[in-house]
Image (cartoon, rainbow, N blue to C red; front, side, top):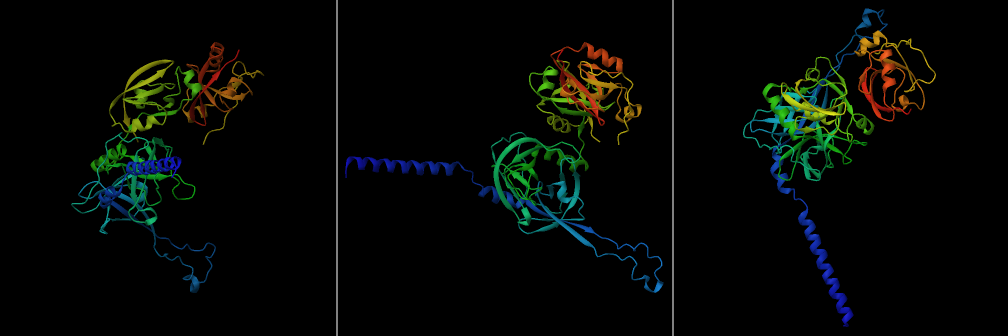
Length: 466
């Protein structure tokens, strides 16, 4: 054998050994779930619900002249009772039988049956539900049950391994694993409420997993599986869980008083974009802009103003508008919180006591003159119809009648029917006030404009080029 052959043989042997070592190392770095599943599964439950539905056959209309001998054939009859069934998952949080699941799993149910891994079955009682967080607390009559422990708040990180156990499509106690894709996802409800900073994962979650636990590698519950994003009805790697910080607080309140009290400010907020940030004196888009405020609300009493940009609520930094509802809802009503705002380009701190959460009229034509250019803003305005003012609860302001293409008003997105109530940092009380304010607006600067559209207050930014 030549020296060259020996050299290549030695090289291949070394390469094979390195490949085997790398493969072994990779296997060693992957998580092992067998012990976790074995220890946690006894405390996970399958939930079956029954909703009874009955109907009645209606008497046919227009048959009042039917002879009595045949009338019994057309009288309304009670339809057979039908049962609608659904399924989900849950988990035991106390040895005496308290169980957490999703509200939507048991909503409307007449009977709730809970099944354990060892095939024991119980009928559950609803202790309390919270639609806003989609959490329900159940109770079964049993002692010495296996339980799961919650992880500490705010320890979960993007990229961590997580595992779900549940009953997808009725396949009892199935396990699936993945990683945390994002934290603090904002998913407004159908009522446009947003009180849950969801955990996003790529764990395979399917119908039937709802209400089941999401674990870290220590076997602690980090969330309650709640929603999936799908086009097909099955998992596509976008699943969302309620974080343990929300679940723990809701559970404690439901257990103590059967309801959940949340903090409330009484403001309507919107996102701050790049142009609005510049117009409000911010170095970057950050915070929650107050576009509207309820009179007499905690925010009003605490000195907050429309146009303030909330950048910190207590110890929580408000990076985007969706952060504020999460922070406020987590605070106990009656708590005083320091709120940091940007107001007219300056930072200000206010102490606010948090409260407790609990068709448009026709537009009239204005009487203002209608110059062809629309002035510096490129907009024609008029008086606001008193009926509209009452309906939208607007004081002062002027109504947009026409917006000229290519004008600053058009660039700001103003439309006919909008009611302008603020330009720059000046309130608009009248037509004359509007004209005076427009005349004094600086050129080549981004300025906020606040207006109402279909009863909703909005902010935009505009820049005048003289």
